[in-house]
Length: 506
Ligand code: BG6
Image 1 (cartoon, rainbow, N blue to C red):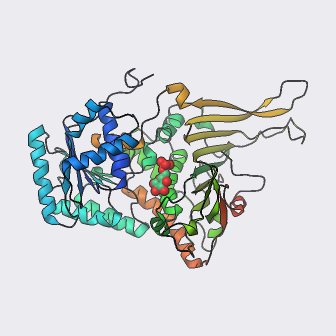
Image 2 (image 1 turned 180 degrees about the vertical axis):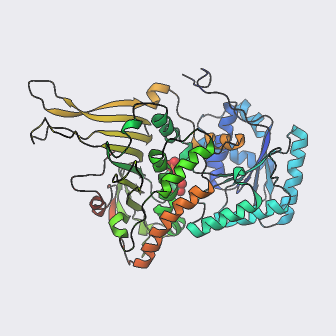
Image 3 (image 1 turned 120 degrees about the horizontal axis):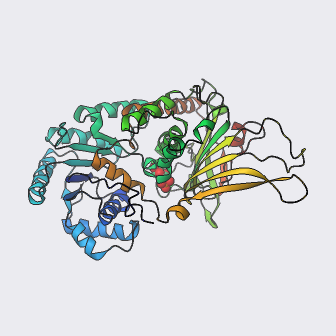
């Protein structure tokens, strides 16, 4: 099935525009952004006319840049091999502009270049900027764009800006960055990206909950016992040791990706699917998270580091042995949290989140654990009685949804065995789901910010996370627990759960 061809997807065609990628020499441009643009071209979803200008410090010709991007598409585009004819016409709209982020003259040159492209292709000065540089360069680029007259606050022609993560490293820096960017752009022009929101399965959370009548009545503290959200990766820090030392997994994965996923699980139904209605509900949910009481951080948050071990059959070094990592480091590469939500729907239903590098496998999953039946008729303590009812929503890989429940084992007894009802995207829809960046770039081109984080949302999640970092800083621990790479994490994390409860082994 091709959902676009079969009319299941409405075509959404953005207006002609020039996109400028700041930090075009970086990995993200080659691995994700250009392959996403190429795939959009292939699916005929790019605006027409359209052009993309890579902006970075290193001197390079348009041809050099196209060659590098072609190599990136050959390796990373979703649809491979790259189609020669399509690539030649796509490459004609790819340009490179050399410049330093702090050099006003470089922005004047960029302006001239874009005006030439506008005139040649007939583009009405619509602009989409993409900040894919180290975050320290964001304020300089934003100020220079403003000073060079490259930002119009008008609705037409439009100017928009996509800001890569991380958006700040704590509440204060996120607030400062929000103020800086809003001095030049209106909130509606700002697209703070979180690539998890571009994943099909994450978006399906809204459809699953609010497009069906049967799940929502169960989605509350009367029927749900607790929720587990797991973001596990088999990879380590992949040469990003120095970055990880500054970040840690709480900043790298939880403040953004896992909190976004959790908000979609926990939010109230929005009054409509417009961007502000959806984000209003997500912010409300984040604001209802109960702050961890002073002095109790260890009762709610477990942090740890991977030691050496074996992952997927390979022997791997421990975090402290990774290049760029301090041998005395106390930076967490594993974190598990117990979160309580102070609102009517979720009172007394804990949300358990965990994320880690060097787990046995890569899996991102939401698991809704339902309460047991109020009165037990089967099993009589034989171990063949009721099994927990769990709804597991697999975000990646093997995207799908499964309901786990108990069924009578055929035969003369009423013994119960766990069974599943399962939906798999691959089986139902055939096609591989689009890459997150394809959907998100297309949405920004269309001006639809539903799947991007709003200023107050980013600040609400940092408010919660920053308090944990502050509590950790006060503890001044000289070491944190370690666990063997390739295992499911430290035993301390089991104590976060109540008696008789277990982390899932997805
Ligand atoms: C990024 C993090 O935002 O997300 C990485 O910086 C992490 O550390 C990655 O590996 C995970 O993304 P995905 O899409 O592979 O789950």
